[in-house]
Length: 468
Image 1 (cartoon, one colour):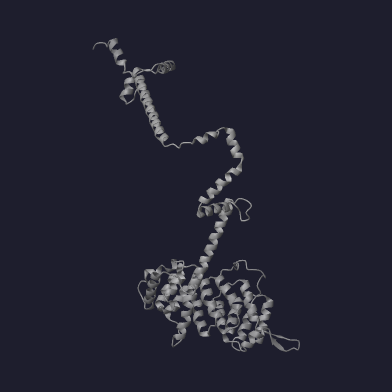
Image 2 (image 1 turned 180 degrees about the horizontal axis):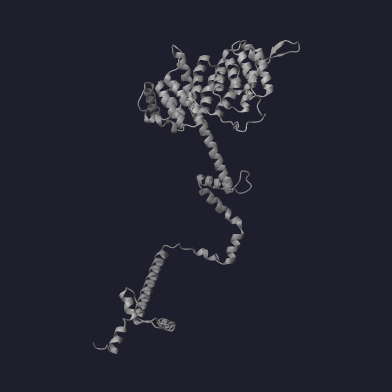
């Protein structure tokens, strides 16, 4: 093997230049060197000093064209002036006496009396309509007093007051026109009248879609009135109760219960031979109780306050006993019933709510104690016994069995929630209003009780709120 020469080793050690590697990888190199700042400045000065022949030729041509256009416009103006000069008003020779100096003009403007005749001639040519418009404009620039200018804020306030007065007039007119009728379009009245006819015989299936959208309407009461609710079938009443009670708020559901269920409840019991309530209406009342405040204010309280029979009270009380009601709603309803005059129907509802065995607040417990204490007698100055509540006891000389049942249920459930003084008053009441069947049992329950720990509110007791 021969030795490698020095030249061959030098050739192997050489490599390709850097610019080739850069260009092969997609890069770019500046081929021309950058111009220095001095060369740029010199070039700019040269450009500013010299203009080539082509550009100077174009500039001269444009200047020539513009000059020709200006000359044409001047010629046109001269022609127009010659034409108008033929028809120009010729001044008579007498007018030469008038001078056009500034002094003469000043003297003319100083004498205002000279223009009176001209003003009168102008007024003759003004029409009556233009004069009225001018007066309105002048009046709009004055206030109601006629002293100062009428600003924008006063105008806006005046327009607002006018709008309010117009709205009040329209509302009053609509109320007068409405009266006791229903203001609905004729097509709506016709459609919902047909739906009412369908609901009068409806027993099963799907309700009409037009009927399902009634709870979403703002004037749902008027639309419901058109359907003739007293003619609905009991099945339709149940489905309608489910629909309205679930989709309406408490206050709106109260209106529906009062409008539909209360009258149907009374009429169905009165019309039935056995004085029983239809099963579907009974279910409808149970559904209505899922909004307790609406049920109490829309059904129970009006039923009691307008006169309720014991038979109706028993049917309605059976619904209360079967449905779970929140304690606060029950306690407020119980307190309201205790404020009403004594009636056997009211006693049935009071006994039903007591037998539900709620953990009533002390406020409601005290109301129950005072209610039973009303029926005790006290001695007068002569030692004779007299009624504490004469107007109550004289109406019912003999207390009903329901009253003693309610008293016994209260003694059994709340004997540990009363104070010693309240216990003594209740024992005195049962001694005076003794009953052979209930008296001994009530006495035994009251004596077996323990006084409540404090006069305040229970630690675990919720606050009494105005939930209605």
